[in-house]
Image (tube, rainbow, N blue to C red):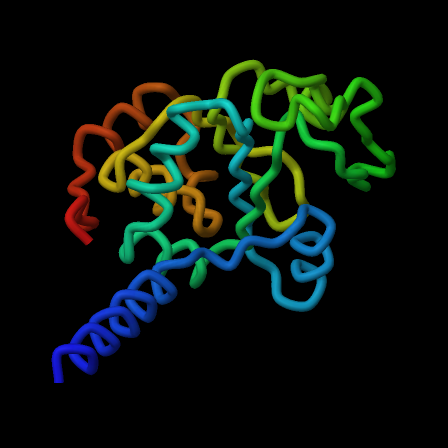
Length: 183
């Protein structure tokens, strides 16, 4: 009986955490998916050694509200800024010629795509439009409530209606988050 309860709890725990996973794809996959069903892209640029990157994964991207919203409205890309992948973007193939396999868990060579996108801090969340063009960057760790503002702004074309800093400030000040940090 006790063993069955433990098994049920383990299965429930796995199912609960599984339901919170974001459907991460590569940048190339996201661009291909956009051709069939246009959506904006959210790209998490991280490194393996970055503490705030790990917090973003654990506290924000594993949040049920955040993951459900991202899965519904975006193609989600997770990109290691110091990884060794080859990435085809904007008509170019980007690599990491200075990658050292023995340094995968500490500082490593910076990927060419990281430089091309002008990413200089980790984590950086990049929002791209339906044509895979960069809209903006959001740097640093964000809680579910903090990232919600950006997710709602960039899920579609609404951001285009904000043309001045004053209009953005109004949007920011009037924004009421619905996501909860406890999910």
